[in-house]
Amino acid sequence: MYPNQKEDAKLWKEFLEGNQGALSKIYLTNVNDLYAFGCKFSVDKSLIKDCIQDLFVTLIQTRTKLSPTDNVRAYLFTSLKRKIVRETIRSSKFEQVMERGDYRFEVGFEKLDTQAFENDNYSKKTLAVRSAVESLTSRQKEALYLRFYFGLSHKEIAEVLHLEEQSSRSLISRAVKKVRNVIHSDKKRISNFLFFLFPRLAW
Image (tube, rainbow, N blue to C red; front, side, top):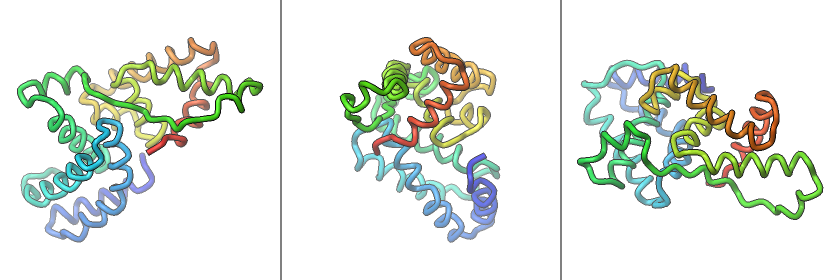
């Protein structure tokens, strides 16, 4: 559960009942995270901003056809990803690409002074974990990003990735195992490294 989830669900219900101001509040609460998430799929910042605007315009236009949800952020992430990916590939292959997870997703770690870390064992391992994360598939990186940066649950991640919940768990487990094998650390320590790394993303 993310920090504003209950409030977003309440606002979403109000929006479905006709209160457009409630959607404006959802926009203000989530726009920065939507932009950060969108940047992982495209380097075209104008495209990302346009897709976010189009997403909310579409919500207004299709309000009467929308369904209640208790996880507004997962819904917004899913919708934005579909819009960005659709804009960057041939539409005839869109559903196939979404199903396979065959799209660009870059974590975007900020640049660090590696020389300053060369005598620090913990920092060396941190750099090794970063390198391992960057070697993962786009879908694995996206799953870790959603889990350790946004703190989404496995169920929420499954919704964004179009997977079953168990598949989401397996995907993250395999990704963490691959990272763990790089520095030979236990699962708990790897999780600590990932929680440390993801807030240091460059937007």
